[in-house]
Image (cartoon, rainbow, N blue to C red; front, side, top):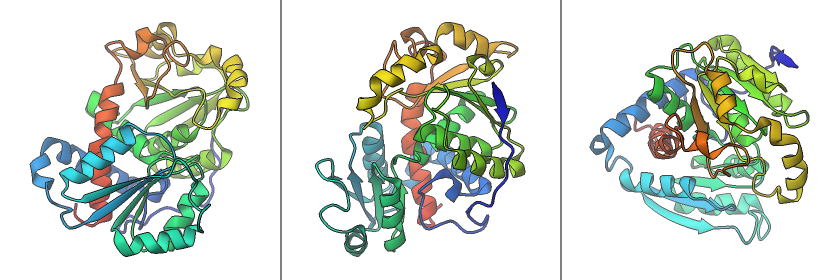
Length: 327
């Protein structure tokens, strides 16, 4: 069963000429601002020396409730390349807001640092921190969205094809936080996106409605399907782990329904039908070969996974430069 999402609702989006104070979700930036992130990231990547020291004198804290490789390293090294001082605060032993209320946490941090980068279980905690803080807050992953990942993914896709014009991306598997941000990013940049998930694992309807509202202005088409064959004719196939952090108790249930959505060589061939060249494969990592994707696909010559990981740094640096008005 395939349906096209067409409901339009009022959404909170940034004004084209004014950036929001924070990046909590992809929809915080207007389509024009996301396009600017893409261009600035390309410049940062091609000419790193031109941006060295741009954030000299600035300080940032990374507060992580969850484990991380790519997110932590790309933010720490990226900020260092821009000249900022970075402090990492491991919050894995205790959730933010447990020892003291989120308001007090945010009001203290704003007195010491110029930027808060937070990786949390609860998006509500992230939003509350941003509401109380006078300094920018960047979402480094929450249960609702992973905006920096999705922006880097679209940047990587643009690099691979030279342009995003006319491209179609299929996301296969669990409609999780990564799927949410991808749908919004694709809608913002005019990329057609098809989300293929089992029944009960679709992205949140509120996110789909938000994407549909954005897509109305960009010409993107947002589709949700239960049929893996819906990926036919898509330039990129994206998947993520079936069991995210904090969902281990659901492993048996998830694995029992996800088998038909494993990205295999056969599925990639289906995606490539009608295209001038084979579809590319994308994954935000960490990956589980043999579960959501076969080793032959993820380690194949059409896999972009390491380009995606590298580009996290460049795109995040572009976002931070823009938030500080130094773009």
